[in-house]
View 1 (tube, rainbow, N blue to C red):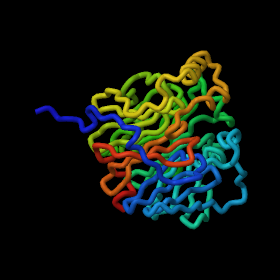
View 2: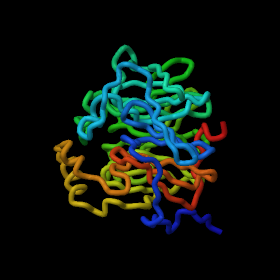
View 3: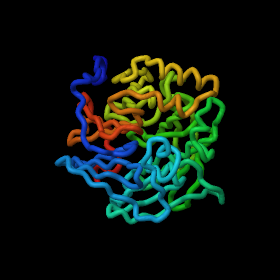
View 4: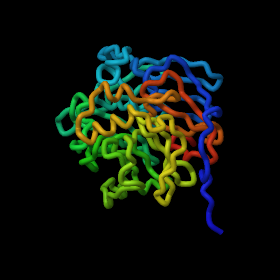
Length: 339
């Protein structure tokens, strides 16, 4: 008998969406722990810990060089902008800081240190996302080396790259990406899936034992017709993700078929205008800020959590809460899930 994909026919009922957290600032990335805790990146320079009972606490990074980024206009381009998060093996938090252009490590009491801010003697660029694998190697993406990242929202720029840090230090393993964003390994950690935001596609790379790349190919549609931001696998092998600014949640089946799970844009004129301007290479900050739905404005990431990993949390760039809903399949456990 044919294998049935658990997401066949699944769409989200907006009335089934709930929220957790309050007064969050730029909750772009969310980590979930087995006990029900959530850890959310926060533009004030640190993370918010949301406990299983719903109470929360902001934990600020204890460093002197972080600027305030509390207003809506500047918090996307200036000051500290904790973006992607990952747990180190000992439970500390790895932070790819999109504002300070560096990979940082924060203990759960806020004590912080800089791990990497240069590569080959040059500033590393806009560090976007960080991921730890089963071998305790740390992978990170750099979206662009252009200081003001909004100038890299262009169909003509391909300066993003992926680097890995291990016992040999930090080095680039693949480059030439169009605004490199989130990355995820499949269950076997054989293929690394890479979001190219301004190419509007997902690329995958076959990673050899020595971290070299042997294949590079598109996974799913060559053009989503929307900017992609965050991705996460479920246990069946579907790759879930977000269309940022257009504010949709999608899933790509193992066969490469695109499914729209939630649409909070519904073909808005602002979204159409943004995409048309992008093709002309004429995007302005005002055009981007005009876009966004109501559920989680500028949907940026998806995180599977809950005891059974069947709760999907939505990270966002402009929201102040974390929406969540139940899904019909468990998420693929991240490396920290089992200790």
